[in-house]
Image 1 (cartoon, rainbow, N blue to C red):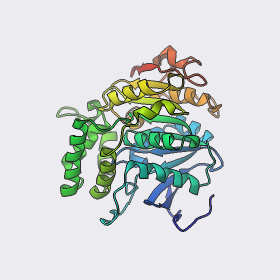
Image 2: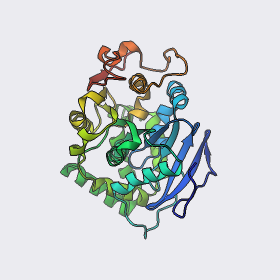
Image 3: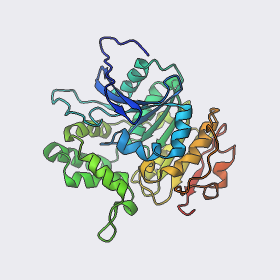
Image 4: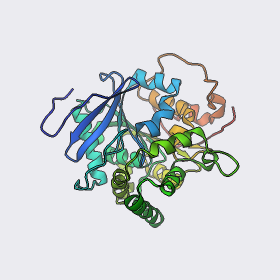
Length: 349
């Protein structure tokens, strides 16, 4: 582990189901990092969407036994939370300077340097706003990234509609904090209407759990991240220059579906692939995490990474080889030679 200096502080008091929380002090403030696994293994860095943290954004995926056995067998997981988004976070001081997206990307570099992670050893996984931050990081520090797994990503500057929508949410956060209406806006951002429920059908357990976790967020902390994302520049022109392979998931009910399609069209077709998930919102990691398993496994084969042992299909999973397009299962499509495949995953077993 890298030695501490005047700008970096490490605290490892909290433990989450076998992982340890580290508070790394950077030039732009303290950032919470939850570390799972053997730190001698290659790093998998995650970054969540707006108002979420590693629990509310990634627990659905990492609680899948198949995903956990595969990922922890091959990686050490570094869950990086946006400033003030970790569990139990205190309100960020009103005197703290506002962050921009470049600051947040640079924080990731400082975290990697702190843990002594060698060059070219990082796999990245991000959701929506987090996907944007990791894409920006990969563009700024190309030699530090092996691959990107992006879920409902952003890459363009906000449209006028999104900009206005975000300004409304920012004003609500400023005057009312995490009020009920704001949480409804966020849940619409994350989930499809199938799981959000209606007057006749109650909302699903994952939505109820997310709603409870949103209650713990401080509105001022969320507002800082939202303001940074609402001022983001367009990354489109730099996408072709990305050196790493990229795997994109997007729900076809995601409000950012068109963003994912645009991003896929601008990436190098030899090294990118798209998986569209039916009847799903933006947060595929929570709403349909099992759908991600086979595409990720074939993606990682391109790096020589495999399951520790072959597991049978989970009876809880809607995913089986017969549910995946034959294109996606061919070695030419994923692994060593990625192609930009538009794959729809059925919910039927």
